[in-house]
Amino acid sequence: MAKLTVKDLEVRDRCVFVRVDFNVPLEEKDGQMVITDATRIQETLPTLKLLSERGGKLILASHLGRPKGKREPSMSLRPVAGRLQELLGRPVKFVDDCIGDEVEQAAKAMKAGDVLLLENLRFHKEEEANDPAFAEKLAKPAAVYVNDAFGSAHRAHASTEGAARMVAKRGGPCAAGLLMERELKFLGQELENPARPFLVILGGAKVSDKIQVIDRLLDQADTVLIGGAMAYTFRLAQGFKTGKSLVEADKVEVAKAALAKAARRNVRFLLPVDDLVAVPFKTAKLDKKGKPVIDYRDLRVNTDLNCPDDAAGLDIGPATLKTYSEVVAKARTILWNGPMGLFEDKRFAQGTQGVARAVAEATRKNGAKSIIGGGDSVKALNQARLGDQVTFMSTGGGASLEFLEGRVLPGVAALTDQSPNSP
Ligand code: 3PG
Ligand code: MG
Image 1 (spheres, rainbow, N blue to C red):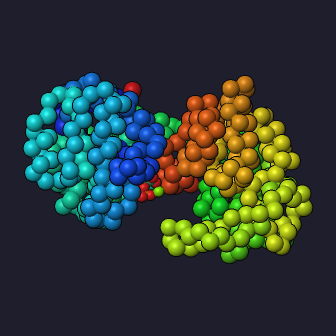
Image 2: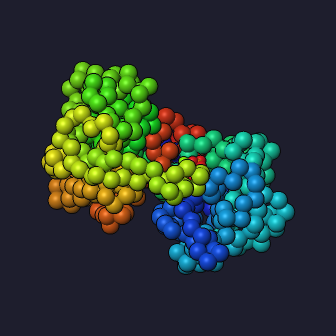
Image 3: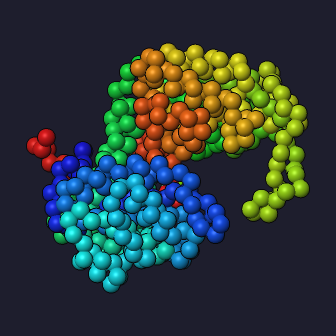
């Protein structure tokens, strides 16, 4: 059922608890934590502006990273307050906890339109445990609850679930923010009756991460294109050699079932017909976990469906990119999730960037609706500077996948249903 949204709310002079997903990437520079991508902050601005302009007193809460119940200075939200203030164009007050006296005092001192950002929710272990007493403390100052944190909506945590239930129990409304509403529209309703051909492009390392999504989308899609290391698990299932490519040998039956379902439902299911392969070797450098960093030599295009014994497949090849681009050009609706290769390494980024260009072009030239399901595909589009040339890019990673799998997200379920006779 449709959920109440911020557009339906009366918030003047009321405290609004707004769960946002400000879990942004940070990097240390000269002893300071610097935000390297502010997309998630940017995307909440419409909701925050609407609520502030309507005179709400906004108490914003988010997690950052996985501090596991401890105060971890490198995961403080303080730098986010600074950036938000710039982007919003109004003062943002910061309190260095998310519950307690200081928060209550700050909330009491707020005037209509003011914005307050709380410290990282996950500095308290009760957040992830969805502890009711903690949820009550979070919800204490709030008359209204808003969730604009689509990226965290798959978590049943105190701020995404428990606090909403507490506000609802007191008769307060619990509404979706504008970003949340858009995410649910593009990853949900828009794909229920897609303009056809409906093309799904799936990549990434593992079949196991995507199998639920594949299974569900095989009911709706006309064509599925597969890229990334997960293609090799499918090739293994077909009896080909995969060399040193990343495969999930224990997922071969799962891959076979997907291939059989595609055949049964007449879905065109394409796997790469050529690839860029290279010989992996251990370098003397160690990664963060103390393991040797892997590098690659002897890069070459392989046109055999069998991968050479000494090599790993790391990107789709030129013939595959050509075919995939032609399929993309004919699609009316495109859903893309997951890169075509190890795109973080420039040498293996051509397949992913080529698909990104094809998707952007289909959107621009043919009016195709292109929906990017979050995570690495968003990174790849931004890297290719094509982020603004697709119809929609999700801010979710795990949340987008779970939603595309057809699961009910706890953070959405906790929101108030739109009454049947409201517009
Ligand atoms: C994300 O970036 O995936 C969300 O912010 C959720 O974070 P989590 O995976 O640590 O729960
Ligand atoms: Mg995640």
